[in-house]
Image (tube, rainbow, N blue to C red):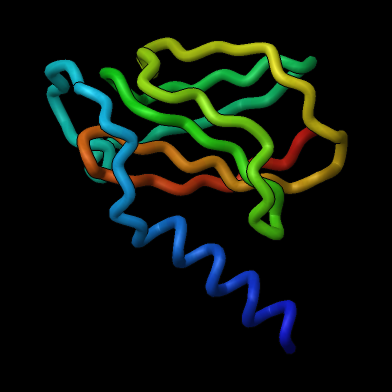
Length: 108
């Protein structure tokens, strides 16, 4: 029960966080909350689609430990090589202009 409560608190802290990293964003046609970003991790490469502009992308373990962060980067056609453990679940937090989107990722 304690673990479930802890995971719930961590998850909602990512979703409702107002933290800003001091970046400047570019012009974007739609906000991230209106967009449907998708993230794919295949053969050690992380691909993000459906997001335009500069922002932050952070990856956390399922218990909330930070894995890596990309701060103030162009998220349009975002593609990075990153080592994630196979068959593990991660939380990907995308932040653009104060809008936050949280996605689940299972590394295969």
